[in-house]
Image (cartoon, rainbow, N blue to C red; front, side, top):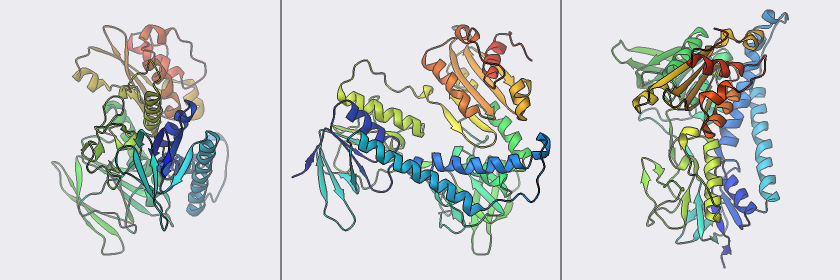
Length: 466
């Protein structure tokens, strides 16, 4: 006899386990099927442990500035194995926390690989054990995604790394080539550069951080280059030779001469593709487009009773977006009223490099492309008292408004701690706030958040401190 549930979720990452918890809160009997680690890639090999690594490199950078703050020290060193060990400890702690949350909410966890096995049925296979069948009228696929590769530059763990190998180096590389300048690539570039590696970043598009506002990306690039990073945009790696004691990459820049770079390691960060294989999609109505499952606004697939959330579906591929989708999906299944489909322009994006980058909503260019007449406000970190006191004067806050209605269309930041500031603009966007409410909001002094206020004021010719 198969175990019966109201809802079965295949995948226990940031989309899957919150869906199960919310379903349980709504009175449904839920189970999560997970073949590896609860918390998924984000908790175990992505979002959280990478931030632990970046915290270490941030501290090392600050230790190099001690004289600026009136301190002195000598022989400052780091142990890369201890840095990695702390990161893994953080991941393990959170993995244990997820187990506790599911148990507290009476969600069953089934270890193994889950596949659709007919209407309302999930077959779970365990290594060396008998298969188990779970039955439920609703099945949520939350199987996540994995790193893409490039022809001729496949990761082999020695010279060519994915994010996974880059998180657990057994020794510190002296030089690094990062292929791809999205959030993952830039975070690893920043981590290794701050720890002393010579870093080259290659991006095939005209700007680094392609999803970000052009002006913000340009500001970040200047800061990275001042730190010593070599950045090549409009460029591709045409050949990689790993036959010697170094990886030798041939880089071709559009409209320019080619060059060769010899490095200790290569990090491949060219995007992700959904884990759509071996989950039982054959013979179902579930459609796959460019490596991702197609869903409607309510996360329903083309197969009745089957839903999909998180990195398995469309962009943005972010953990907090996956969590929101998981909760929304569970509430939709439970019949909660007055739900709103996800508006992806309300999803903030954060990159935790140095400097940090954060954004929500439309870029200035995208707003103009969509036909808006815009008003743009900007405020530099150098004009903020708290930033000066912190010694963090490089950065910019930028806001984009609809000139006709005053609607906040987008906000974009680069600089210290902006990943903690962006939620203010995210709340404002969700509440459909206009410039009038933002101007009348009182921000604390001294704080970095004052720059958010000043950027709004500057868009309307009312800035006080520039």
